[in-house]
Each structure stands twice: as C-alpha cells, then as structure tokens.
Image 1 (spheres, helix red, strand yellow):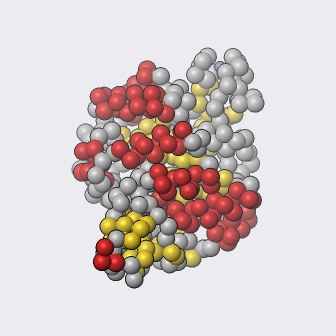
Image 2 (cartoon, helix red, strand yellow):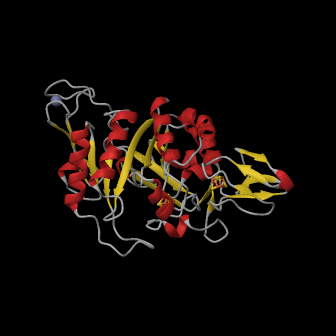
Length: 346
Ligand code: SF4
Ligand code: SF4
Ligand SMILES: [Zn+2]
C-alpha cells in the first residue's frame, strides 16, 4: 500500500533525501530509492510497500535464527518486496531484487496482521525474508499493536538501518538477528552493492546498548570471507563490542543466484570458525544449515552440560531450570520462556 514515509527531508528541485537506511539516497522527482520500496511523488517520499506482503508463514523462532529468545515459539513471518542490498548470493532474490509492481502482493493492515498472528497461535511477528528496514513504518505500527496484545516483534536484517530510524523503532522491537556478511568493506562493495560495513556494526552495537536482544549470523562463503584472519577479526569485534553472551551463528553457504561458481561451505570450515569464536571468548556459538550437528545445541559455558538439544529447528531436549544450568547453576541468558506444543499452521 502506498503510505506517506517517515525518515526523509526535502532536497533541491523537489528531490528528497531518505535517511531510513545508511544508503541515504537522494531521490529525484518521480524516481524510486535504491531499495525500490520508496518513491518521490510531488516532492514527497512515499513507502510503496506499507503492508504489501509477498510472503507470510508461521515459522519456529529457531529458523530466524533466534536461539536465545522465546525458545520453541511460533512466529508469524512476513516480507514485502525489495531490498537495499543486491547480494550476489541472495536466496530470496525473486522477491528482494524487484518492486511491488512486478510481484503479487496482498495488502494487510497492521491490525489484520495481529489478528492473523493470534489466530495462528503465534507468539510474535518476524519481519524477515527480504529486508525489513525498508518497511520500518509498517513494522513500527505493527509493533505498537503487537505490544498491546502481548506479542513480540522481531527483525531479521542486514543491519543497514540508520540510528535515527532505530530510535523510533526500538520501543517496538524486541529482538533481531543481524547478518554480518563478512568483515570487510570490500565484501560489502563487491558482493552486496553497498559502500561498506560500518553501519552494520553500528546497528549491532546500538541494539546491545539499548537492550534489544541480538544474535548475529555470519554466512561463511568459501574463498570469499572464510579466512582465519577475517573470521578472527569478526570474533574479536563480537566479544569486545557486543559481549561474550551474544549468540553467534556461523551458517553454511549454498550456491545461489549469481554466486554459483563455488561449492557449499565444507562443514570443517564452519567448525574452524566456531572453534575460533570460542577461543576468542564467545560463549554461545552455533553452526547453521547443518542439521544434527553438535554445534546446533546449547551447552553450559561453565561446565559443558548439554542444555538445549536441537535438530533442525526443533527442540528435542530442554534441560534448563529457571534459565539456569541444572548441573552447576550457571545463569544462561535467554529472553522469554520456553514454549512447547507449538503447531505450525495458520
Ligand atoms: S531505505 Fe531505500 S530509499 Fe531510503 S536510503 Fe535506503 S535504499 Fe535509499
Ligand atoms: S540483504 Fe538479504 S534479502 Fe537483501 S539482497 Fe542481501 S541476502 Fe537478499
Ligand atoms: Zn553448567
């Protein structure tokens, strides 16, 4: 739905400056921003994707992945078309590298979305699949209603949102998984089509400082971002700037879209990355996209006891008692309660 945008100011000759994301597009009259989700009409900026949903499903929260947030809960997951990045390996390129005029969408007002979530017995909402930053106006309105109804509101994001937008979103955002796609400006320029990594790191640090539950995902791509040096620098940053309690997910790459000239990530590369993160001091390190791997589980960082056993996105065993290790009493940082018996439909 077309909707007046926030986060912009007028420029010369009826252009507008958008500051929703760190691309900070200057948009001439009649044109769209780089994300193809915002348009300058008559010298005013409009969101073209407010509630224009291209995907909707109830997922386990573990699929986001969020492993330390309402474990086992069901989350109504939605997306609108477009993205402020153009990653060569985008899994969802058919809905991210397009605009609302090119794909079929369904208009869903915020109150209707909340009704759908409640009917589906979901515990919250996830803005995901493409890039939620670009529909932040909608996410704020959804978040306000979600809060009133006792539902959580989450982002799975590339982290390119500005602090100005985050400040307005933060009261209605409970958790986020942010992709740190590499640890170099060069990768962000060549592979993602944006100027550099700094805004992503700033977003993560801001979220931790402001009490938004954060988990980070690093997709390990062979011969692209998998060197020990780069992963080591990423881990140093996580531990120093975000803290050792922030869960880190090293995820397996599969060839997609325009990045098909290399193989899936060898499991031993993921294991090396995970080992390095632990050596650097990260307490909760996971390997994603390798179902059944022992690093899919949560272990007590003090005594090593298996606390949460997962297979894929499903919890098989949950040993925590009052968020503490039953063996040594170590407190494990988990937001919310475990939800069991979730049904995946709506
Ligand atoms: S949200 Fe879209 S229009 Fe706004 S700065 Fe980012 S890419 Fe440009
Ligand atoms: S940020 Fe995510 S949705 Fe956007 S192009 Fe990259 S992988 Fe695709
Ligand atoms: Zn323990």
